[in-house]
Image (cartoon, rainbow, N blue to C red; front, side, top):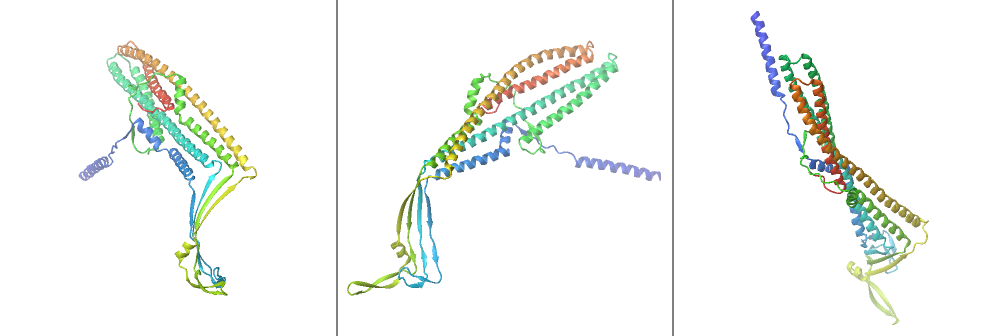
Length: 469
């Protein structure tokens, strides 16, 4: 009986071991390769995947079609008509003037009409469409620049969050090693158990801080992925650019930066072309005051199934000829005999149309004035943005230089405090204060380095320079 219980017991143990082993073999996680994204790839993906960009591209395509159509509007309208008619019942024959069965008739025609003059309205409409197309193209580029800037900010935020996390991990590793050393000193009688408890409590706080920074990094990475309109369920890794060796050019004067940006900024150029389009809209509205001259040219012929040849039968009283009707005239012969041409000129002079022309002209002037004000407003907005960016760049340069000097001094202070703490000449709280100051200095220097480069890239973007390292 005892042997049976023992056999069942070991049988259950073996079964559980096999289940656990099978579970580990079955559900062993498969590590998927992460997709690496560089800075330039992020910019390209953000632009190509953005829905608003696609909508703006459709607006550009629509404006391009409209511009092409305005070119074709200079050509005449050409149309052809080929009617075939049949009436049922009897009717008067137009040839014999007798009652006869209604014939089959056809009256084909080919016509062309052309507006010779309408106050140069077609030319002005063409220029309006041309400048509207250019404005839409610059509007698209302005939208792309905004997306690139937002993507660059999100990309740098990921880098900054990652560096903060790495600094926290390095700090945590340092404290864990320090705990091992303190435990050895406690075992040797050089320190008390209270030093261990103090260090352990600090380690717990550092682990909580590391978890918080990990969450910040994950959230920053998710924000970037969503900005790129990528699938957040896939694994991505940011390819860090070489920011240490990144060249930072000397900061130009504010006026020089603005003048350079003024010539290439797509936002300003967009408003300028909209103002030009509004200017030609005024001329188009003015064309309604002028007469319109239309020229029409037509070709036509006629066929009837009742048409017959006329044959001279006799001459009555040697004066009046009498005819009889012979065979039916063939269709193509009728078309040839009845072929005719028309040319007409039509001059339409506007006299009164309930003041619609005048009010339309006034509205076009108001629209042009609004377009000019939009140019000035865009220039002012650009100047303010560049002024702020230029001031931020100067402040970033000064802060980066200050953090460099601060970090150098705190590196020496940390080495000195580490040596004193290891020798038992410095208590843990004083050592921790030096370590905290050093960690804050590292974070500030990293942030200042990224901020300095980012502020330069913002100025480059305003001046039409590519965002690259």
